[in-house]
Length: 85
Image 1 (tube, rainbow, N blue to C red):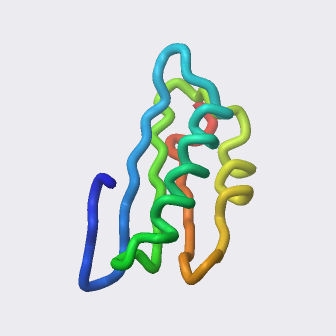
Image 2: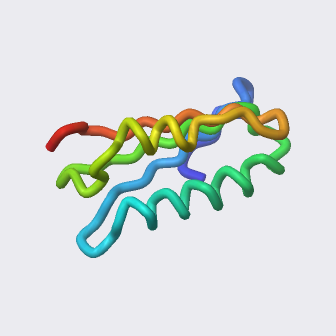
C-alpha cells in the first residue's frame, strides 16, 4: 500500500515498469493487490497508478479496462501513464 486515505476509503497503489519487467508481470502484481485490498476494512476504492516511462505496456488502455472492476464492495480503477511513448 502506497497511500491510504482512510476517511475516503481510498487506497492508492503505485507501480513503475522497470527494465526486464513485462506488462504481464505488472498485471499479475495488480491482480494480487486487488485480491489483498478487497479484504482491507478501510478500502472501498483502489486506484492503481502505473508509471510506464519507456512504453513497455503496449496496450495501456486495454490493461486499464481489463483491470477496472467492482468486486466484493471494492471499486478498482487503473491509470497507465504516459501512453504512446
